[in-house]
Structures are given as structure tokens and as C-alpha cells.
Image (cartoon, rainbow, N blue to C red; front, side):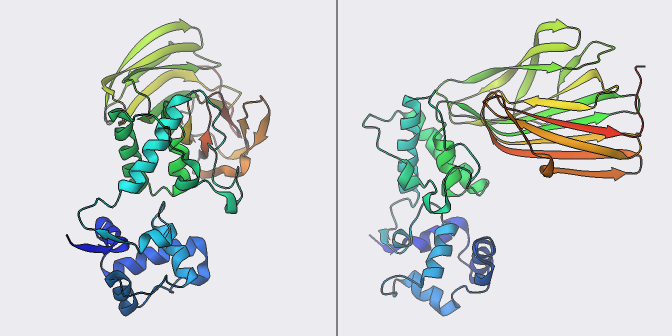
Length: 363
């Protein structure tokens, strides 16, 4: 049975074993951790000694800090352990996540205080780590939880999530999580709109996700609100209308095939029929835990942007300004606005308002 340093296996797994590739990834982490450490990667000879197991003790502390950021969930001691080549290197991370998922499944309705942007709940020295946030459930682990935990490991790599974010996602086991919601709003000169939604959903519950209820409201709707599925997602969508009154449409997106437990899926649809007349604002409610939401707005042929504001509603009902997160521009006579928010909870909402030179009238 052959053995090697865990760090060597991790580098092979990520295809970072070439020295130039390793240095590039090392500097990518260093610039975010401490810009003074950029260019401080070990020499080619040092790296060879690390991977050959010739190092006595551990590398210098700065090296250890960067390595631990390059490989979330592993301590420097773990990275320089000698392990069997026959043991999958991700077993430890998967095992920890399985325990976290199991624990969250037992209390799916619990308040998730850790679901917040990094640094907003814990000080840097108290950041949630996989080791610190996870306790054994003391119960048998069903296969569905293994699948969710393994998917979390894969997502962490694809999305480049650190240990903090991965632990936060693990804490939401039992929920359907919105990894990303994108709302594209296009408004014509007369105020008539086309709104395109794109949802990327992660089913961390133990039931297939085949239907999600939604609703849309407009202050002005000279015509019926039309809602149509769009191609381009990973799932087909059928729109089931459940309630219609002037200005309001309640509907459900029927998803085919359903998003199974432990799977991710993308759905997309569009809405037309709403009109922006004199009050220019958009309020977006969040019905589930949402990791990232983007609202992109293009108001065409209205001259210059005169003012804008953005608010985020808290669960308590209070509001706080997030106007500093709005990016705006004028493209000729078109006004462009983009607002992004992270780590929102069910029941929260974000509202963006804007004022332009030309005011539309109902047509």
C-alpha cells in the first residue's frame, strides 16, 4: 500500500501539481489574505521537499495560513499528514458535512444565525469552521444525506466557497436554498416592461422539488399580466396560474423533471404586461434562503438618471439603506441600474427606486 502527503493528493485532485499553477493559486489567495505575501510562494525545491515528506515539522506560519485558505476545511497539520493513496482525500470533509447536514435535518425550522455574510455575525477569530460548527448527530445517516453532503463538497469547489460558506450551507439542510436569483427588468419608452427571472435552486430537503409558488405585482397593468417559461435552464417549466386580479398574478412553476434531494436545478421564465408610469420602483421579496440576488434594470429612452435609492427590509420589519451597493450608468438615453445582495432570509425583501428625466404616461 503506497502512501503520500495529503497536500500532494489535493494538488493532483485540483490539477495544481505544476509549479507555475501552484504559484498562481498561492498568489490568488495571498492577495486577499495579505497583499504583502504575494510572491512568497515556496521555491520549486521547497515545494518538492514538502510533497516528498522531507519536511520536519510544518512550514513557516505565513505558508501555513495561505495553505489553509487554499484548502478550506484542512489544517496545516492535516495537509502534511501521510495518508494511504487508497483513501479518498475528501472523506474527512464529506464525513463532517454529513454530520452537519444530519444535525440541521433534525431541526429544519430552527433559526439559522450563521446564515449571513462572512464577518457580519462572527469576528474573524470566531469564524465558523467545519470542525467547529459540526457535531455528531448520534443517529444513522440515510443515503440521502450522504448525497447532499457530497454535493456540498462539489459546490464548494465549483463556487470556490471557503469553509465558512460551506458550513453555512450545511446548516440549511432540510431547506430548498436559492443559490442565485437573477431578475432582469427591461422597460420601454412607454413604461411597458419585460421581466426575466432565473432561479438556481439547491434542494437540501428530503423530498423532490416539483413546484414553487410565486407572485408578481404591478401598480399599473393596462393589459393582463402574461407569464411564460423560457428555455435555457436545466429544467422545463410549466406555469400554473392560481389567482389573478388587476395588478396581481399568483402562479406556480411546475418543474420537470423535479429537482431531487441533493440536486441543483435552474429554471427561467418571463413576465410582461406590467407598466411603470410615474412611481419607479421594484420590490423583490425573498421566499427562501437566498445566497445571492441580482436585480438588473434597464429603463430605455428616458434621458438621464436623476436619483436612486435601495432598501433592504429586515425580518423585524425595519429597513436599512443599501444604496451604496447600487451600480448605475447612462447609456445614451437609457438608464442602467444593478443591485446585488447576499445571504437573505425568507421574509426579507429588497426595493430599488429611481427617478428619470422623462415621466411616462399610461398608453
